[in-house]
Length: 412
Image (cartoon, rainbow, N blue to C red; front, side, top):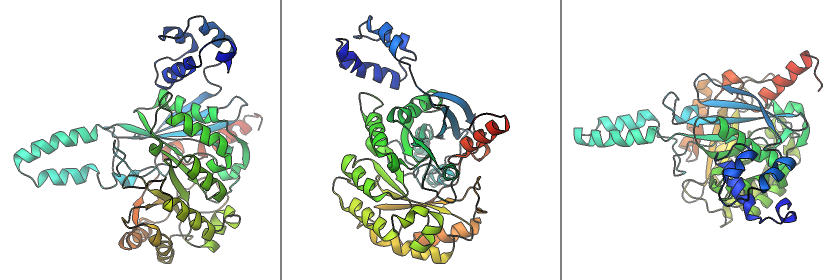
């Protein structure tokens, strides 16, 4: 609108967008270096616009270099956080059992599931072949291990009103919705601090994405626009606790975006105790909405595109064999003819700052739960939390920052 009002061609906006998104320029002043952008436009933009409305306040890198966490301050002074998970680095454990609790199943550069392609599995294949085959596979292994990439977990709200009992963000309540630009700026900031190219974005940070539907949809559109960030829609995952009306709107508006459902319990009774919004969106209706999604031809599920079911495993709450069998009964009818329409992600609970006295499950319990699901024919992975030394779980860094500010006499 600004360009058109000042008699400039709108195409210049996309030229500037693309340059900023891909790191070709890092300030408004550098726009003058772009071809085909009028030089007289630059001072006008500098007078009216800022490069970003948010600023990075703190950057934390995990000791193992697998996670980077950004504390970002918005223009109104509110704080949010965004997390980068790094894969394929030489000093990073690339085994699927260490995937972040905020990230999707491990994928290779072609979007294929890499859950069983840890370094050990490839090495075993090499050692069973002859010398000539061994050398050939060594080259492939090197290429595989240098496939460096990062997944970005973005926030969509300041706080959250869903009130999930195990979530630090839920203790904040809803402070406000992010504008689409504030969501997009998380990707911009992340690219400045990422160890690797950012290839995937997951809406699994602070907030319920579908509770801020319009801003999230606009951000997804910008992220997947080839004239801007150019991410493939299938590399963007939107997670929801089950806001059913907006699940349907998302399917109609962005069918190629991947869907993740925060389930966390196999029955309505138990889910109400962990996820309070289950009273408004009962499990039976949520599963019906999932069925609609799975049956919609526009969604086009395949070996690399599945609906992800997120299940935080909490000791003594939802980790029993009975819960596993109930969950299997719930998911088995929905895996499709290929058996791959749905994948279950088990996330051992990471103790965080919540009123409930929840504890992490034992490894034995997680293994037993996993075995029941797997042997029942449902795809399942176990994803352990990354970045525990930098408060990697959703909302922890913001909650900690607020406590520090209160101790220092800052405003709420």
